[in-house]
Length: 265
Image (cartoon, rainbow, N blue to C red; front, side):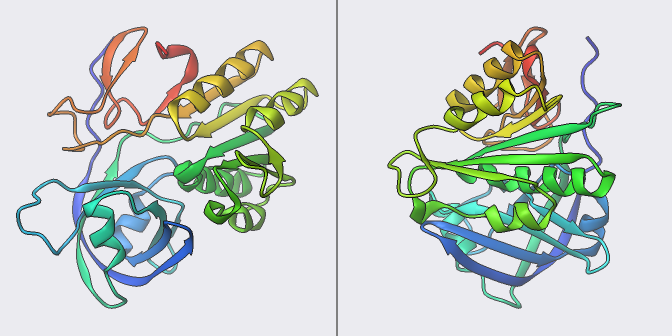
């Protein structure tokens, strides 16, 4: 199999338009970066240079939820889980830095797809919102399942509805919103209806593995976003490798979106 061609990533200046908390530990960031907004495709990622600590040389890889070409803006949801995302959450409106992108390969729309199911777990909601927007733009009907630990961490469901999702089902581990349990509690009966010919999913790897297996059992094509700590962003450092049926591949160049059947789970 040929080595993936690195994406045409460029460094862009950006200015923060909005950076607000939208759920427990989750923020929504909107930046102004017109060239990046024109270049990004759903499922790709970008890598931020986050100010505040000159000893941190590694950029912060983040997927995106919307690229608005007309406004010249890019939106992302991110979870504050370490020093890099903590510093990102401190960036105020009007502040700026640089961002590298677009990175990787995004969601693919198979010819003839009629109805899709998008499945998000936790902060995996970010590229799933972008997927919903893609389906809305091309007129493919789509529904969603969103899973979180608890209602306090739930976000992005309104954004999915705004992007044309006919039905948005919610699951929480503790039962504080929607169905108690994992996303599979909703995905399995939805796939059993035979209404879907495509599944796109992003979230914790065990969740995606379970969703992919349900899709395979139902005879439905499935794509998964294997988000990793994509340190360099262009395939040089091997920190984001994913095991596939063709060997180890970097999520930053071969992915982050993969056909689930190509993965060695």
